[in-house]
Image 1 (cartoon, rainbow, N blue to C red):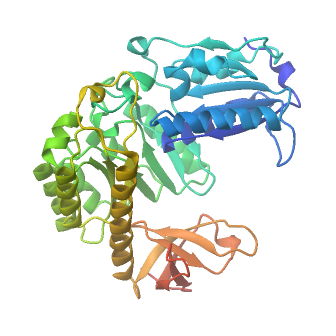
Image 2 (cartoon, rainbow, N blue to C red; image 1 turned 180 degrees about the vertical axis):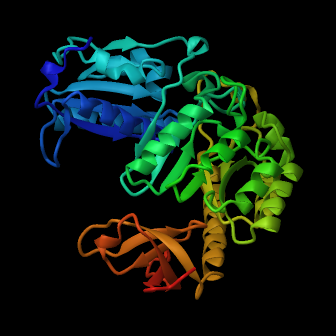
Length: 443
């Protein structure tokens, strides 16, 4: 039994790097600490505890993690510093040696963070607590509200794919998941707390079921029956795991939104083989076509990595041409970063940093054109928008069912409300469409 009396009147700050899954888990950690009597520090207030949830997807991410730790140690002198997340799992001793760090927790220990706080006395040297990746078995549930209106429901963790460039299986462990029953219960609790939108998160969510013998499609159907939740979004799903039955179900569902995020990584089959991906460009193109056949206005986001080892100039041009011909909405472009211990390091032909930058910029420009074309097609339409609270004096924002960002005049009484909006032209920086809220309008 933890003696929580030591935590009374203590304050904490939280810093998260990386993916939506990390943000979800940090939010859950925050809830656990609040229940133990630790409140979140106010802006400008010196905190007693600093929690850093790290990412390690690239070398740049590692650097940002170290910078964040140094910054928090400086801003909150004397605070008890806990570092967790992927960087902590992969390089626990390196993190433990950073000045000011007290405890480093791996993937298996993250959910038991409270047990490692002790009496909050600073350590003379950081201590690391991790479990070898192959022995990570625990699925730590998380359904937490983000900074805005939506909840993030963690349905799966870990990955069994071992792509040649990726360290995530080593940082997160093998694929595992919660049961459908437990996840439905969490969605029902989110609805009881007033949640209207849930994003399904995980490392490889289409692989759901390794632990329980269920399937992701079974989960989708069960969540669709939860009363009170108006919107679900599938965060990211591998193209080989996005089945036609899932696509057809989303098309007929009133709760699952016409919004997909599908990692492509490369539009060249030779590079996909070097990456050890489990599909080719024909399969990917067929999935995009299937979605557009049944949901013409679906938003489709795509991940692309540029400059991987082995990506010649010709291979990149083939990627560019392939993506240019796809009816997708937005690209998330990443420059390849060499990660220690990955099989990609054995591949010849290294792309220079300068060339990576040029390739990234070309794809980002292509992404802007595709996104603006998609937005422009919807100008003049009336669509349902879930509004999000904004700062006083700033425009209010929200998203349509198919994830178009909308900007309207500020009225925070509409926070977390779904309202009909007539979509207007682009805002000044073309990051959203302006909108006019319609009173007494039935959609």
